[in-house]
Length: 270
Image (tube, rainbow, N blue to C red; front, side):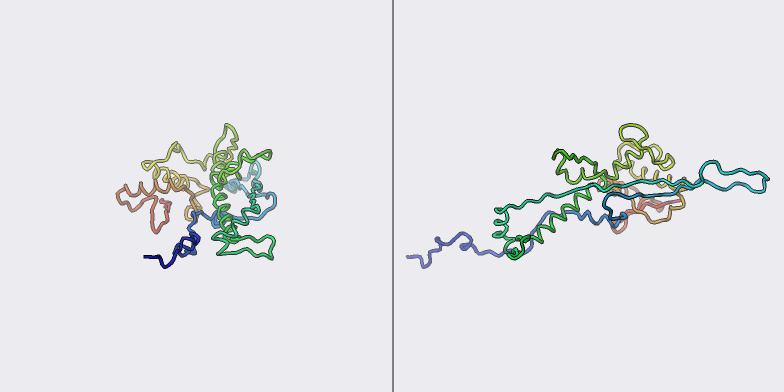
């Protein structure tokens, strides 16, 4: 019996019955630019001075018929200078890649504008994904970053943002240390937790959080802020340790750490 229709001469795509799903399933990346919700963001071109006051104790008993002036300065002003660290993305699209984009799925969904010299197929989508990636790598550096830029070459390039600038982790480490390489030691001893453990575990993490609460309550300067709203930044691993530790505890009304509606709260219990 003869075939009524011979489809073998058609291209492979024309032999298939398919439909394009218009959504691209892409790797989820965190928006590092959301950090402005937790930090003060100040647009600068190079750097800026952050100035703070330190006020020493002032009062003494009166009616002593003596002059006893406060020794040393009453008010001390200190400053820090954050400096903008340069970062860049070098993006190269040659003629062959531009052509491949134009005939790709992106070229069908979002064709380039022939009248626009800077236009290429899928430009809005691709640039959006690039900015998402930049945001995530900046977010990686907020805590974990350690500046590793070398102007002479690319030896430290492409480290997921960890070499863009000094992160808070490094700042706290050098501020805490009073000796050793890079030590600054400008965090007052009264603001340091006593005898912190070397490694956090499920067994000790709640105790370490209690040390922070104890430090605040016992510090005459910090205690006034015990009821002020503040954020406590921890890693995903530390959050897991806290949740597992809470799960293993019997119920106690005066728990230092509570978990409700996806939010961990540290209670300043007096």
